Image (cartoon, rainbow, N blue to C red; front, side, top):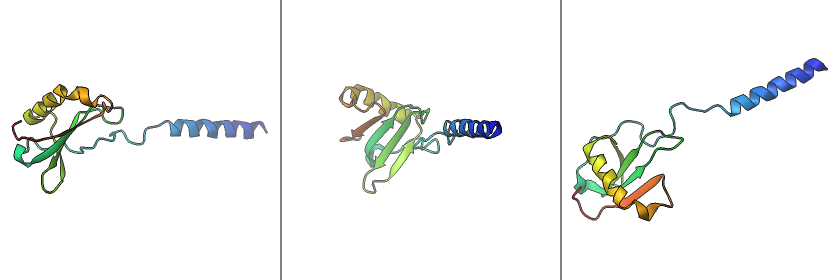
Length: 111
């Protein structure tokens, strides 16, 4: 009887430990690769900036292309991404309700 109780406790403890383990050490970032160094501004319809979170430890900049609607990742360390991040900080007060994602429509092409 004591061995059955010990075995039950051991299985319960193992289940708790397995449930608390992360499923992936890589995180759940949207951008799998570093991304493109730049994309010509005339092809960009909008851009989104995702800040660091518990699931992804890096800043991600994703642009949506005009016409196709395809989404591409920009290298967050590139000059163009830095400019987009600066632009987003100026308008960040309007999106305080969603601090993880900043979403912007581009109406002009000068970045």
